[in-house]
Image 1 (cartoon, rainbow, N blue to C red):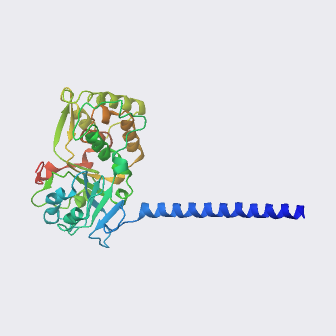
Image 2: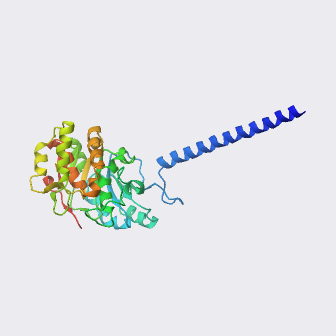
Image 3: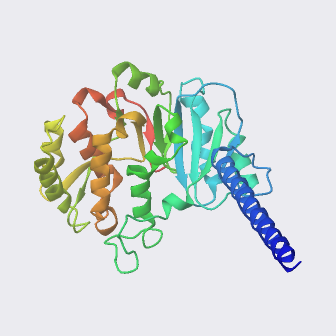
Length: 325
């Protein structure tokens, strides 16, 4: 009898162990499936939970291009800019509108935007990306040389448009991505520049050319030193050497394309050798320490990796535009 009781107790113990393992595996699968579903789902704004991505005016059309905004305030302020797109931009309203945002806009503000366009509008939360820093950078010990809307807010914006936007899964669904700032506005009649870029095999459509200075941004010219060393280390031959020389032809200045409007070809800027350059820039912390702006970095990136025919400029096509408006 004692032996039978021992075997019975052991059986009960093993039964509990097996049931515990089955419950753990079952819970893990549920959690995993829930995570995957949350990552890929498109949630309607009426949902009670806070969605990662919300769509308005959805259509069944296959879309190749998008017009993107980044905003961390009351998104209804984008209404004046978005309201003219259907009328002035001649793409048959085929491009989606993406509003990258931090926090979560209230339903009425999202509805205000959806009401002024027939385009599909996607609200995409970028809290995690926008507030991240390069590996090894300590935002508490470092101080920026230039501040706007907070200690690091402007630098986060520069890093987002230069690097992080290219890692967003939604963006990878498109061929071209147009950026517009909240205080930018397309005026008059614009041709479909997405089609124009496709016909010209262009990878970048830039805005007006300006320049940043070492006087205004101490540490800016360290970028010139970095480029020289990068070229030598990787034996890089610039695709547009004239543009690269022009970038530094004003003493203690670096030329830039004003990026409150521009268009990038996603596939091109995600090429491995360009991503290597992008990651190398990010690892210097120059965006945060010296405010190396995305506009300067975009100019230099196209000088290094794009031929002269692959870059188009708004001013060459007399496209009316306003910033700030």
